[in-house]
Image (cartoon, rainbow, N blue to C red; front, side):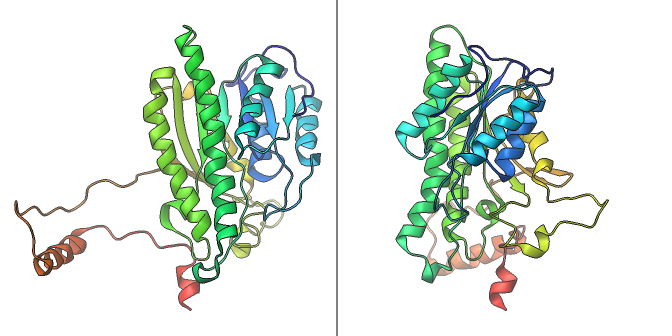
Length: 321
C-alpha cells in the first residue's frame, strides 16, 4: 500500500464539482476505464484512491507504474490522490484498500469496482485455472472490496453517522446476454449483477446505494477481441468507443446526486445510456394442477410463441459460421 499526496481529510481536489468533498476508491484504475473514471472523479472534486496491480491483459506480470502515473496526473491537475497497490481479490488487499482511504482522507464515500482481465477460450478448451482466475478477479474482486466497504459504512451508521455512500459495479453485455468464447467472463459478469441486486437490498438501511454499469469501450480487454467495433474513428469524428464516454454516468452514480437510485443496471456506450431491464415474469400458464411432460411441453411452446425473443449472444453468428 503506497500513499501519495492528499491530506488527513477528504478534499475537493482543488475544484468544485458534483463529487466535491467525497472520497472515491477505484479498482483497476491504472488504465482504460478505471483510469478514465479516476480522472473524471478528480475533475468533479473527489479525492481518489487509485488501485491497480499493473498486470497484463491476461493477469500476468505486474507494475506499480500505471497507478502511480494516474495519481500523478490527478495531482498535477490540482487534485488529491493516493495509490493502493494491493490485490483486491484477497481479503488483506481489500481491507487495505479501505484502510488506505481512511488513513489518507479520513473517510470513504464511493467504491467503484472495475478491475479485471480476460482469458478467453471456447468452453471445450477452457481449463479450471483460466475459469478460476477470471472469476477471482471479476467476481471475488467485486465481493471482497464491497464487503470491506460495507462493514465500514455499517459501523458508521451504527455510530449515528449514516453515510451517503455509493457502490458502482462493472458488469458487461457478456454477463447480460452471453458472449461466445467468454464463458468464464460472462459467468463472472452475470454474477456481479446478482451481487449488485443483493447488496442494494441489504445495504440500503446503512445509507448505501449500489448500482452496476455495463460499459462498451475500447480497452485492452476489448480492442483485440472486438477489433473492428473498437477501432478509433478518423480525425475529427466522435470516438464512440473512448473509455471517457462511460465515466460521466459512473461519476454521477458515485455522487450524492444519485440518491434514490439503487439496484439498477445501466448500459453506457458512446453517447447512449440505457437502463437495462432484467428478468421479470413474462407469459404465464397455470393449470392449477401438475402437468404431464407432454402437456408442459405444449404449454411451454405456446408461452415461448408469446414471449419477447432474447437478445443475441455476442459472437454467436461468427461462431456458427
